[in-house]
Picture 1 (cartoon, helix red, strand yellow):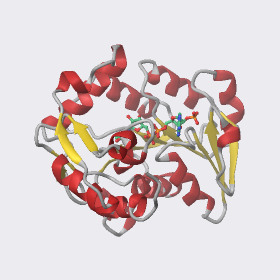
Picture 2 (cartoon, helix red, strand yellow):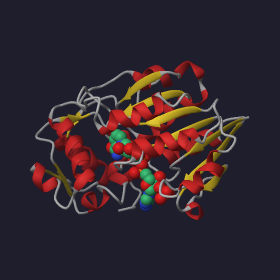
Picture 3 (cartoon, rainbow, N blue to C red):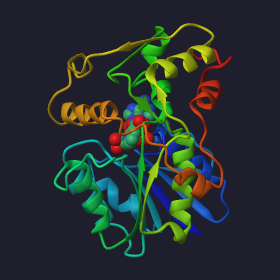
Picture 4 (cartoon, rainbow, N blue to C red):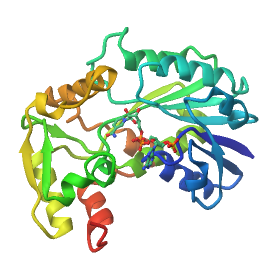
Length: 278
Ligand SMILES: NC(=O)c1ccc[n+]([C@@H]2O[C@H](COP(=O)([O-])OP(=O)(O)OC[C@H]3O[C@@H](n4cnc5c(N)ncnc54)[C@H](OP(=O)(O)O)[C@@H]3O)[C@@H](O)[C@H]2O)c1
């Protein structure tokens, strides 16, 4: 039996990963959430876990063989992740959800420091570096409200994004957690095609059966209301898009899963077509 702990089982990646792992023979899945009562995933044991409460960590990782770390986007993440991993049994395999780099970061930047917390942990590791998730359009906390109102405001300056379906990130993560062949690998995980934001809006409109208008936001407007670490982090994410760094199509999904990643149109159809959820 392989015991796997997912730090964020309600996350866009954590939830489909938990579903996949729960369907694997000889895998026991514990799903961490600050709100474990709201976790409803058959075959998954909800566990109270909060980055803000280190007293919740010891029991969460007790007896694990592998752990999926959904990186918390906060300034102290390198320290938090280092501390959490130090609570795991020495044989634990760590899979970190990081992000596509594209040569943008310097070694002292936050994202490489988070990765180093894993690389220097003394545990075996796999680093996943996905591009932008298709599921940001289905997330109440991100772009769903905009899509509901028929708008797609985004600071892309005409550049493209190779949208990756979170279900494919989850499928790669499941293999990385269970297959020793993927140890000590850093995998760029992208979708199979790069779309402009205007094309993205058209695909969403087709799935919804009503118009979605793309609005190219100035960077300042996109960052309105954001401060400190969040502002810097968002600036970097949009800046990488504007430099074409997330338009890259990588072969890791095909390599690991033996099939291409889902297209953005597939995501849009599965999520919105005929669902009436909007
Ligand atoms: N989004 C992207 O396009 C993208 C691209 C590349 C990399 N990343 C990286 O991926 C990481 C985030 O992964 P993710 O997008 O899978 O996580 P996510 O969906 O943002 O969820 C992270 C956590 O937010 C909490 N949460 C609060 N309210 C929630 C709600 N209504 N529904 C679901 N969860 C809720 C959950 O923790 P509790 O259950 O404890 O509340 C959950 O585990 C970040 O490090 C980010 O930088 C994201």
